[in-house]
Image 1 (cartoon, rainbow, N blue to C red):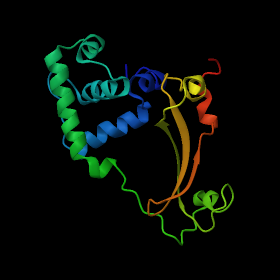
Image 2 (tube, one colour; image 1 turned 90 degrees about the horizontal axis):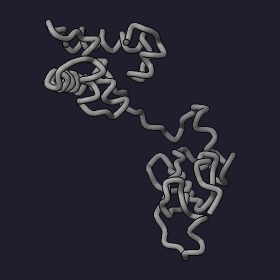
Image 3 (cartoon, rainbow, N blue to C red; image 1 turned 30 degrees about the horizontal axis):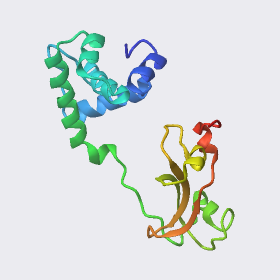
Image 4 (cartoon, helix red, strand yellow; image 1 turned 90 degrees about the vertical axis):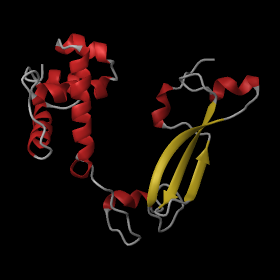
Length: 180
């Protein structure tokens, strides 16, 4: 399955074959994961990634990889423990943005979209549940049927809110129904 093509590998594990091979190499050489008589490293990692990528149960992996449930469970847990041990290698720690940062990706927060001078920070949107009159509910209904309103927030580098805009639809809201 992994060796068929990049498309099949990506559909199954959410990684292309090159990335999958790098992960297997890292697990083998850095973390000490080794093949057994029953299952090789590539199959262990493929089972593990397939569960994570598709949120499927043990029984689905049993059918897909033609293995017993105990085998699937055992090797999933082995790979999980090794991946957790490798968190220092796999996860990059964020570097805080300083006020004198010259990185161009933060320039959009300087006065261009908002009347905020000399701010570096983060932009995010979120839904907050609201209580509205029954006649207004279709306006506030999300694509999942919940009654919420949309907020756009900007935080500075200390995490303090410096700008909040409520109730507007953004491009990402294309999932909102246009009918009552």
